[in-house]
Image (tube, rainbow, N blue to C red; front, side, top):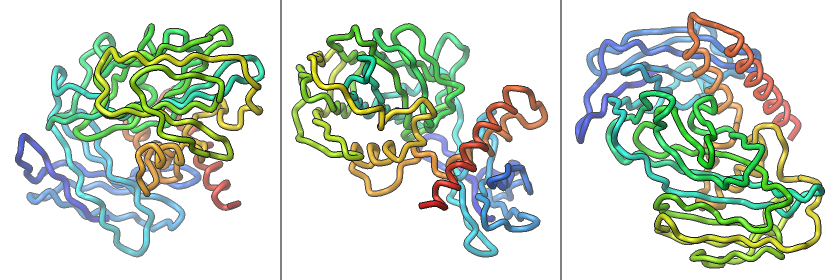
Length: 341
């Protein structure tokens, strides 16, 4: 695989020379580094797999200032593959600020026990030219409010490591490095049956906010406009949305007695992004015709395994083995699912 590594600083970019580029091969049975080479003066590399596996994905990693950057996984279409240019950045702990570009909230009808399931897709935006990093576990890179009533909080497959995302009090906190551009974060939680109304906390300016309600008896009050009905996975939702929503904007959802939802077709306790539903939601919300990286395709899962291998290189422990076994299991299941369809 050939490619190039570029260091971006300010409005300028230069080739990143003499930096180790590592080729990872990841397949259904596991993954490992298969070749490495230092970049030349033009930032270029040419890496070779001893034997090309057409069932595997290949990606290249480069470390810069302690941060691992990865190319998108590629499936071999021939003897030679070309990766996208890999951009790396300097780091900063105080700036640039991380903005909330988009927030999309999906609220299910009440379940058989009276609770309601909620999924949120958050799009974090780094508009600067440096990768934002956390200096310690008390000062996250980004923090956003979630309902204080929420229980059973979990993180779906996101574009930042789920090991670096935590709920603390009434907020979700991100400690993972956030490079320039957008990063998507998927979270889920449950509203207990005692919650009769939900004041959605809007603690920061948001470029695009939308709420989807399956419950036809629920009433939404606030600045969001009704944009019509949408059908997803055979279920109907009302969609409300607004642009340029300032912090403190009131958004209140009142729940009324209504029919129970069918058995949780849209929600399972396994990682949320394994559902085909999520890919549909992201395409719909963002009105894009391409598959979002939030969906855990085989390539994304393979990339996560490679990233884990790189992060724990030379210091395997129980946490590493547990995470890797889980990712491998999901990769095998996803490959089998796609084969059957």
